[in-house]
Image (cartoon, rainbow, N blue to C red; front, top):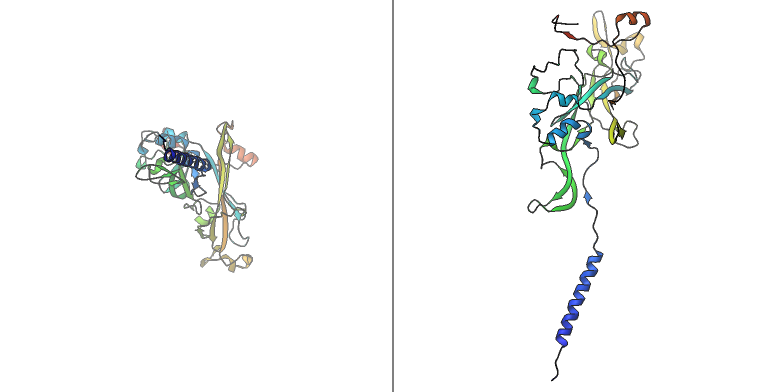
Amino acid sequence: MTVRRWPRLVLALGVLSSLAGLGATTGCMQTRDAINRVQPDYLDKSQLIPVTYAALVNGTDPGALSTDMVRREPQWYHQITIVDKPATTGSSGVTSYTQVERINWEVTENYLVARQAYDRLTNAQTNPNQAQIGNNPRRGEVVAIYGIDSHFDIRRAYNGTTGEELNIVEENNSDRPWYVRRFMRVDWSRNLLDSFSPLDYSLWTGRVQMEPQASYFNNPDDPNRPVFDYGAFNGQDGVLRYFDVTNRAVLHPESAGIPGQPGIPACLLYDRITDSCQPADILMRQSFYRVDPMRDYQPQSLDGHRMERFGFFESDRQGYSAYLNALG
C-alpha cells in the first residue's frame, strides 16, 4: 500500500519558511534612539542648593528645613557691572560696578532668590530662638530675584494606563511635587529686584530713572549671551563654577536741581550740553562665581587709623552689642 506524505511535507516546508522569514525580520530590527523633547537652557537644582535638595528628595518636609542646612549650602560671589551704556546718559559709565556680595540661593516655586550669606548686622540676626517670618531658615537680605518658568524631571514618557515606557524623553512636570523635581528653567531675561545696581546712588537721589526691560540674549554669537562654566571644582567634575547673564534697562536722561527749578533735565544746562535728552539702553552683567571653601583667605578687621595714614577704602559693617543693647 502506498502512503501519501505530500500534504505533511508541504506543511513542514511552510512552517520552515515562516520561521526563516521571522528570523530575517528579527535580524533587521534595530533599537532606535529615543526622541529627545527636552529643551535647552535648564539648570540642575543640585548645582545651587545640593544640601537642601538632597534633604527634600530623601523625604524632609519643606517646612522642616533648618538654618544649619542653609549654612552648608555653596556660597557665591555676586557683582553687577555696566557693560554697555552711552557716555551721554547718566553719571555712571561703562565698567561701573557694585560691591561684591557673598550670597547663597533659595529656590521657591516661582522664584530663584539670591540672599546675602551673612548677617548684615553682626550678632543681630543669628538668634536661633527667634522665629523668622514664615519660619524661613534663610535670613540674608535679598540682592537678586529671577522668575522660574517650570520645575521638571527628565524621563521617558509612558502609557498612562499600562505604565509602559515610550521611546520619547521629555520634561515631566507632574509626577512629583515641584520641590523634588531635579531641574528648573529660569527666566534670566530680567532681575526682578532693580534696587541693587551700579546706579544706586543716582537712583536714590532721583537724578536718573531706570526701567528694566525683559531681554534674553540667546544667540551663540552674541557677546552678551549667558555664560555657564562647568568643570572640576574641589575634587568633583561637572560642577557649575561660574555663570553670568546680561540684563537690559532703559535709562532716562539725568535730572539736576537749581534754585527755583528742581528736577530739570541736565541736558538743558550750559555745562551739560554734551548730555543727551533722549532715553538710552543700558546693559548690566550679573556675575556669579562659586566660592572655593578650600581658600585660605582670612578677613582682617581694619580701624580708622590705617585709613587716615594710607587712604585705604574701607567697607564698614555695623553690628549689634547685646551688652550695650545698641548698634555700633
